Image (tube, rainbow, N blue to C red; front, side):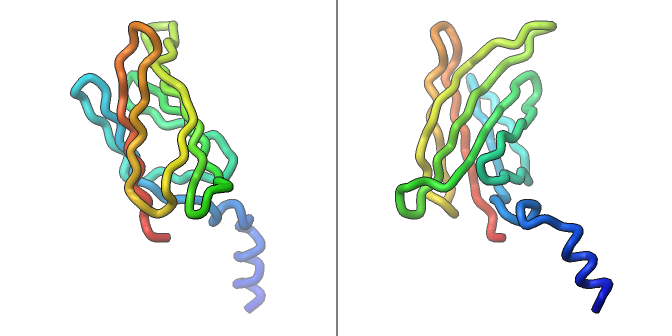
Length: 119
């Protein structure tokens, strides 16, 4: 019993709180997928999709069953990092949601798909 309590104390509540998701990114006809991404509330997570970097923060929304999503999508080109798009959106919690992200001037549009997994 003491070992169980000690094990529970090692894990913080934040480590088990959050959302397990499948994340897909579509840009110019190409698609990338990460099967298991973990998002901690109010913490920016960074996901790598080839030469693209998706930075995303998910938090509870004031809207019922909603989540606020703040994101930025960057592209690595050699030593440079270019901003493709950034924005904020409200999505429904525990469902499959798509974010249609309009690209910055002269940058492609993208689709970010979040599929929440049962915890």
